[in-house]
Length: 107
Image (tube, rainbow, N blue to C red; front, side):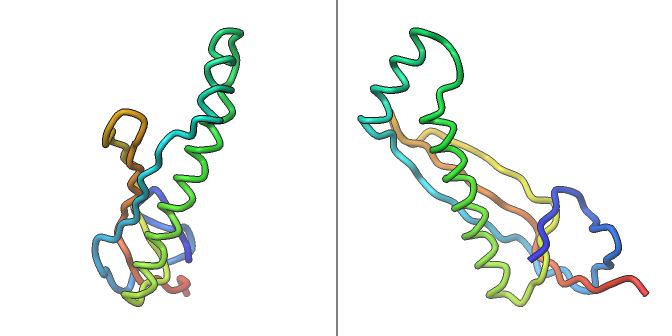
């Protein structure tokens, strides 16, 4: 599955536009990670516990979006974007969305 943030994929032409696809996940903080993160905020530097949590969430949202696109017969997704929102204290949603398309090689 090809995934692009732009409206074109170099070397490919869009032969069919399928439409909007999306994948999301809602993640909550973990008390063990919060302890490490609180310590790190006191001494400074990257909060790796949260960096890892966000990276895992982003991959899961992308995977879910890809599964939906494949179920519609797409072989690529263009105009991919991410959105986040707070659900409640300590929990957030990460949403990946884009346009599912069928592409083929340019002759």
